[in-house]
Image 1 (cartoon, one colour):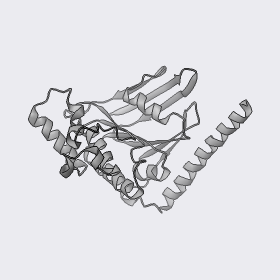
Image 2 (cartoon, rainbow, N blue to C red):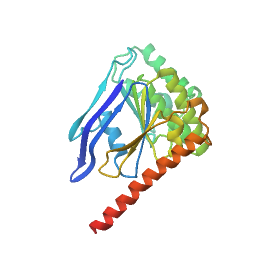
Image 3 (tube, rainbow, N blue to C red):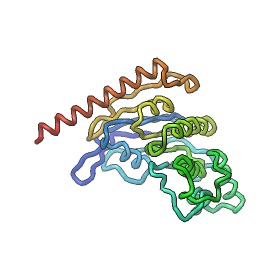
Image 4 (tube, rainbow, N blue to C red):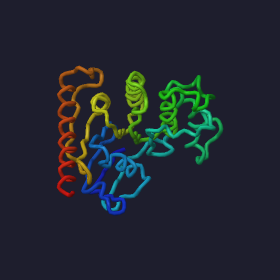
Length: 256
């Protein structure tokens, strides 16, 4: 499914977070959203998810999801958001509890999602027995169990170690190859963005608008950390974010 973000404005009380923000995300594309801290990246994700409603403008989804889809949009949170007294399988089952499914179909979906993230042998374990990577895999399985057409990720790999993060990034791309969902990932990690995105959207300082969009032309199979095109792209992204941070600092100095 496509996502259309059209002239969106959103504020919390008098603090304008997003202003005149427009973006078109084609079906089946992975987009990473970067920008200065506090610029509204997670707010934008919540608006796309329907967890909040923009003050003005509109966010539309276009296209028909798969017949298997129980909910067109799913979200993976940074802090895992697992229920501690439920096992891995029971956490994955949560999004299914409001759907009229047979017991057989419910179990099929749970085990399919656990197989996709390589967690079947931990199905009956509890979150406090899992590593950070396993907890995040559980969160990912819980999103996949509804067969979403759009998968939103809010800094999903930031709370885990570098080695596990790289494994999860590769697994995420494998999952995308299988399902071809539309992916929107908020991240602070420039390297991560150049490894998993088709396009990288840089937001300006608050109130955020789209500052720049980069196409990542290197095929996934060729994306090494030292690839010259990706290294140059990372440098360009960091420079733009630095410019936005410095400009924001000057504005604060001028207002004081």
